[in-house]
Length: 273
Image 1 (cartoon, rainbow, N blue to C red):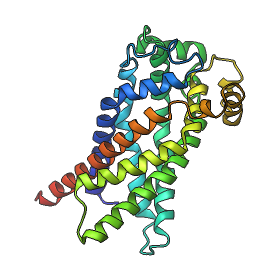
Image 2: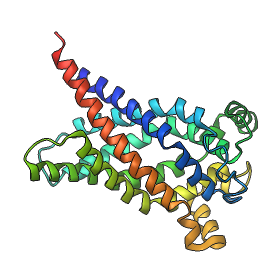
Image 3: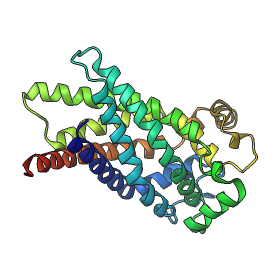
C-alpha cells in the first residue's frame, strides 16, 4: 500500500472511530448495563450514561486507525481480480484488522465497561484498581472473547458492506456517494450486530466478572452456558435492540465517515505538488 493510502487509512479510520464512539456512547452504556450480571437498575439504569467516556475517547482513534490500516493493507496484499475470491479477501482483511485493533480496544473496553456499571467511580481510579489488583493482564481480560466476537461480526459486516456498495454502484453505473456507502454500512452493521449479540453478552460478563471467579478466566463457552442456565435465550440476547441501533447508526457514521475522509485525503494527496 502506498504512502498516501496508508496515511489516508490511518487518519480516516481514526476520525470515523472517534465520531462513532462519542456520538453513540449513551446507547453503548445502556447496552452494557442490560448485559451486566447485577441487572440494568443496579448497574446504574439511565443515570450517568456518559460514565467511562474518557476511556472510549482515548482508545477510539488508535483502535479504529489500527483496524483500517490493517484492513486496507491486507486487501492490498491479497490483491485479486477474481470476483469469487473477493468476499474471502474482505473476510481475511477484516479478521486481521480485528486481531490487531483488539490489542488497543480491549484495555479501553475493560476500563470503559467497569466505569459504565459503577458511574460513581472515576475512570482513572478504575484503571489504577485494575493494575493494582490484576496487573497488566487484567486490562486484557476478555481479549479472546472480544476477538471471538469481532471476527464473526466482521465476517458478516465487511463482505456484506463491500457487496452492497458494489451492487449499488453497478445498478446506478457510477461510484457511490458517501451517504450511500453509509446506508450500506448501517444495514450490514445492524445484521452483524443481531447475530453476534450472544458473543457480546459473553464478552461483557467476562470483563465485568469479579477477579478470581470462574467467569473471569475468560472461557466464552462457560460464560454463555452460565447466562443460558440462569436467563435462557432472553439473557443471551440481552441488549440486542440498543446494540443493533448503536451499530446500525455506528455503521452509517463510521463507514460513511471513513469512505468520505479517505477519499478527501487521497484527493488532497494527489493535488499536492
